Image (cartoon, rainbow, N blue to C red; front, side, top):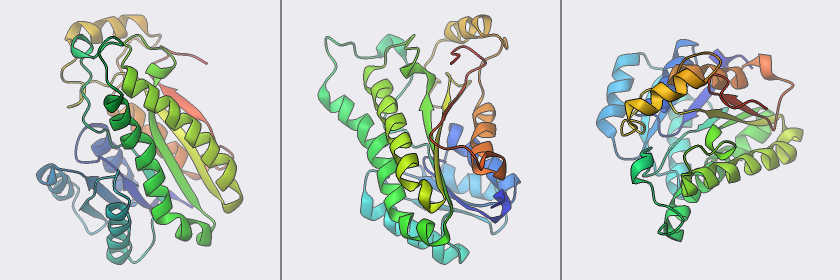
Length: 254
């Protein structure tokens, strides 16, 4: 299925990476659902900026299965078509500030739970909300957003990094179970992104070190990651599932 035939749900799409992913899908002619949790104003502003009747902003907490089901039903009614593609991007209550991060001495299990609920539970809820439609149409694309930090934890964000490692395992389990329905599940793992709301607390010196230490000599941008997401949604990736592509300028290679 070409991208301009798809109905795409991007979670956490009111800002940063999610907003750029939504923009790129819209540019390619897809119908796009901009999911937001709290920031209705930013989500609606993005809708206004993109324009047209192929984009809508809908509120839901991805950790709440009933809210996610309601969102998917609203989107189906609005577009007259079911969701074909999910980008699990939502980031719950987290800021990339290495100086302020909790260490193993003081981090709480609650912090881990928060990130697991946002990453793993959120991905489970979005899939389960659209599974019947995806299985019926024998097509689906699930694209989970990860991080290069769980493979190369230059900053040990214990809760965040661990949750994304779990999400990769979930991605591969999804791929194995759902392939028979024509549903592909993959992950795109970015490096530290320049510069989003989530990375605004990161000192400029950190970005300088990354720029100097990567083969491409640049810091990864939201648009770099968005391009890889679109690849996994496109027909070009029809033979790929269960994979994790790292988009970080070559800092981590595998």
